[in-house]
Image (cartoon, rainbow over all chains, first blue to last red; front, side, top):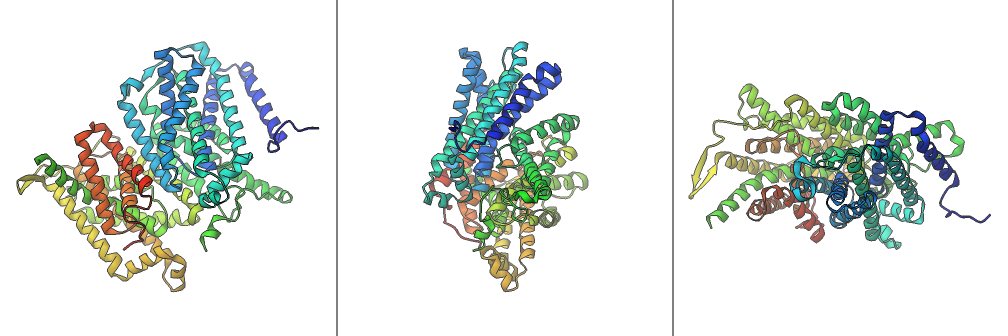
Length: 344
Length: 291
């Protein structure tokens, strides 16, 4: 039989995702519960954002503490486009996504030449600067009092399926960005930029591409958020807590893995809505403790835990790809471990 | 003309604070190759410690510098021994230590919210508003004191690193930890000491800053960014480089007030950072390791 799919797509993964998507698509008709409907929509949106963050933070190892900037820009541009120009919703999301992606390039193109910690600190600055500027930019954001979109109850119900589509697209992109030949190039950049350049990987162009895609998806998610909640304000959209939530979802699920951040997002939303809603004054500390514990005990999060269990239960499978316990390098399937080369 | 002189003087006075603030971050990175994201947290903690001692016991903030720094030193050593030590070294540990220390910062911030609420606080002493006349310009006593103390601390650090056996060991570990192990330098202890020293400097700078500015639990985020700008500008661990870089940052910030609306001055540091990284990624004075 002639292959229809590219060689890097595993049919089993495709079928699993299709089944999960089908179940999620009909689920609202089965449970008919508005509370769960809302929770699932929030979770699907969180999944899309966590995956988009992971392209930069996980695949390229460039951890961003300022991704709320693109989320916020997307949200406000989408809302403004709908209110002021009357652009239809989906077109407004896409337009907002493109603008958010371009905005990411504006600050990211110069800063992406920084590696690791340097880049991360620069993103803290980006997030804070964007929040300040947009809080005072009344023309775009309506200032501290924010802006409202007309409330449409029917639309809010339907947005669940849009969120599902968004999450699926993000998942497909995550898969493609890891498994395709492009994914190999990204891995090469992550483990050693200079060496990647030597073998003909254009790190500047690829990093810019990934940043644009990540920023664009964030922007579209921001636009979705604006449509879903009908009210947005800069302090929330650009807030530091929002940026941290993206990091946390990635870390819980497993930075740099394909589906880890999606699982991390599910856990995160559950956690936020049960535990943290009861103790709002403790949420920062809880986020912090979660970060500390995951990084100390299982740097690859739930995915790492799963691999560990799998290795224990089925040694015959020879699961090694993801960092062996002694070398906690977050890069998947990268040999030799970075520490060894450092030791030279 | 008078305005320009005034701004230049206030830039110089501010630079002292910035240099102290940045030095702790540069020291830890220079020796451990770890960016201490908890730096911002310790700046905030130092500010609150001074405020609390002043409000509860009436201890002068400048007197509490010593106990606060000593306590912060212990906190730094504990954080190193308890958490940072367990992470892999080198590039793989980079992102992990970053996230871990970020977690510590979040916990500190939350603790400050719980203990002291989110309201802005200030340390008010009897001399807070006093000024002295110097060559026709009025200078706040506090700013002068902060500047003098910052210079003193930097001088002490410089002497520690260049004139003492411990300083020699710290510089040696920064250059090559493996060789240090071979010749019997207790590398782990030097790491712990350096981490403690850097943390103590952060708290000290925070306390100094608290005598000048108001603060809340979020205090420290922009300070971390500024410290980072100074470290990148000035190269690692060179006292002179740090001082010049701090002066540049302070001057750019102070003079930006002339041209930009107030809320945008916060973005100035970041723009400067990006410019430096694009034009001179190795810092203004090239790469030098401690000294």
